Length: 87
Image (tube, rainbow, N blue to C red; front, side, top):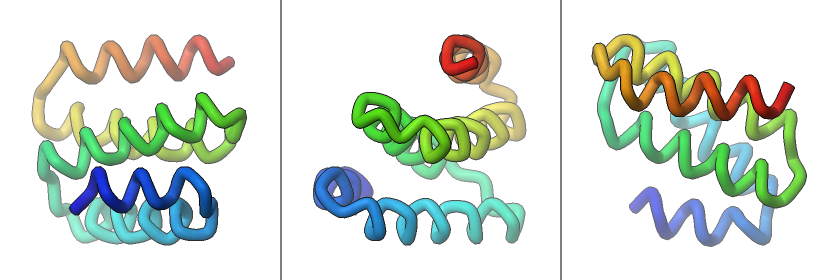
């Protein structure tokens, strides 16, 4: 489900925003899932490559929060380094 949505969102940023809002809604409900973390990270990567840095930072922040809550320090560090690179 997520990869298809991410692929479709590559051409339609309104879809991307909608997908990320759903992911954020789940985070706000304290739902933590590795699929949500990786989907948010993939969405952030997609936005970064397209030059949508505000969207990328937003999605990386959610991904980082998921990884930290799941006690996944290796994945969290990758996201932190990417965020630092974005400035």
